[in-house]
Image 1 (cartoon, helix red, strand yellow):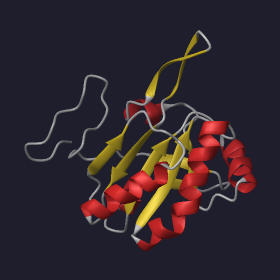
Image 2 (tube, helix red, strand yellow):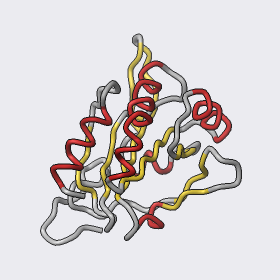
Image 3 (cartoon, helix red, strand yellow):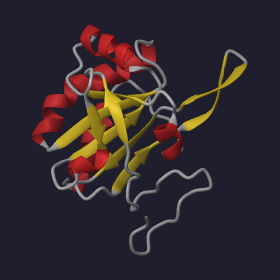
Length: 170
């Protein structure tokens, strides 16, 4: 759903700044728990960050960046949520190993990654494959996408997000 005179969705279906964020429900790293994006409406803004794989160097750096900034995020009313195609058990192990205080979601069928346009062809060491692209969406309390980061540099990414949160007065 688009709001007002905002941008229309891109050809890959990715939500754009100013549009309603696509709703979804996924399992968390905590057995038996699920996360529903629209449950956040009216409660808190959400940093939805997509990452390729648990416990890899870049993804660990990014997760630890959000871990270290989580207290400040919470003070500003922001909920951090990470999403990858890994399963709940992998997420649980990753969260415990690095003491991650935020929710990790298991998008094992990649439906949500496709919905957000981050499921893309990737190239590593000359080998092409489909995978989750590292991108972050800042969604306000009304469910509107306020900022998108593509081609994220994992180290210090949380600080970039906080700068934008402060500038937008979310």
